[in-house]
Length: 439
Image (tube, rainbow, N blue to C red; front, side, top):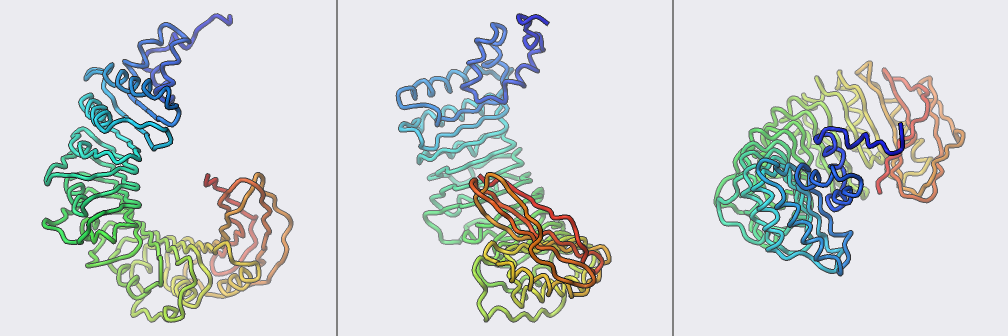
């Protein structure tokens, strides 16, 4: 092949457009220098538009504004916009006017926009978004919603709605938003703020009958009836409140415990999750007070006895009430496949040994259950090095091996000390180190 051969330009327009769709939109037009044939493709055939003002200085910011306008209006109904991402988060010394942003979003909606991702730090009122009927996915971050006429939200096709750092002037705006999404399947609400809240609603929340996944860990302040989310298969929340409905389809439940754990209330909730298979309990960051170490469950939830498969306990410190829960789980769950115990970074090796000793002697009713012991650490590391085991402890005819972790530089979230209990006895396993970059 000669150096002058241009094999990429010989590809069909659809493939070329797919290739350049992975670039930020402002970079797409720089591909013009590669080939004359590429020049019309960026503006006319590119379905995904991605604009980020952090790359533009104050002097060049008018060019950014002009680029957004030209790119959007170069499209047509025949060449629709599928995805539109706009990030203006205040890193620039200049920001677009509210009228500019509203015009861009409206024009994109008129050109068939289905996926909208907006992150704007300035206090623009963008309630126009909630009338874009073609939207399938809506991701809003750091958005201010200061006005919303009643019954104006109309998102008949929306399936995914993620709200992060959204500011609402009135608490009932959330009701309007959810009631205007009749076929919503995936809902996430994090760090939602409200200026004026009475927790009273003039109209009722409609039950989201198509909802499959809900992360509502910060919605308790809004007093949104849990009945609205009772159809989900996946649920993450900080606390149960109000009247708890039956979650007939729920298979995965994650509960974040900010303060003391009320086990009796938790068991009452689990009784209303007949199909539960996976449970994640994030225990309080601070040591639980003595008054809440007492645990007198009336009955063991049926859902934890039959089809229940996996339980994860995060920030586990081996307190008496935590031990009691794990013991009851091992004794009563016949189909349990795995229990994962994650201790906090503050737990020292001696405490880990004591915890492992206690857990190793608990009888287990499931012959195939694995017990994983992980210590979560946040450290600085450019490299992770393991050295030979520091201590061994005999347990149930097997060996538990503790490893040290040496880390330096870049921040990581690290899990180590992997031990398995299979069929009620401990056995030695190869160490498993899972490193997840959290940067």
